[in-house]
Image 1: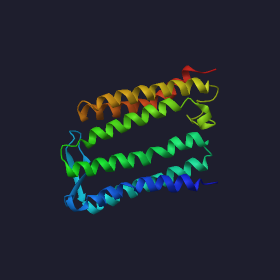
Image 2: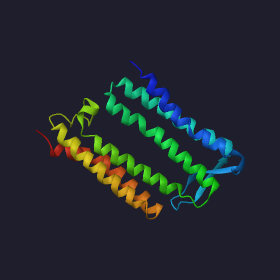
Image 3: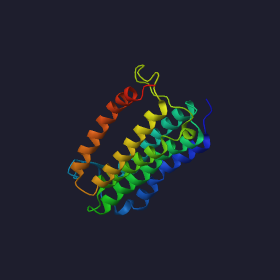
Length: 204
């Protein structure tokens, strides 16, 4: 397995970059910072500001290392690998920045930001998923049901669903966080069922 050390170090560094935001505002941050919000958008879990500043970026950096190694082990083409490896660093910067922003100004809507990020990620993935030059090959396993199917049609249909879902989730962010959460759950459940329908529909 050949690990792309340059992209690994760069992406992990970006994941850890938000720590500098917290350090910069450290003296004016409250001693306890909200790191989790309920369906109504109200904070329901607090940690010390030191933990909040360091803990989230480090956790996401560890997730990024795992994802990067899996992508490199799977020998994903460079274009596709770049997209996958870029998701967590962007999330780290936006979410951690949102947490700090909320700590400084309680009117900042972190759940809304999270919904927007989820929507944008789905739109991006849905747009690039059908482009085989980004991935080289599609490895999906549906207990053998994927044999003898038109692979490209299945992928294109699923990508269209992802893009549509991303748009719907993004728009829901302008409304209540409860509506957005319900949509995300429904879309996630349907996402696990849809592939089985698609492979049955597009049998060669």
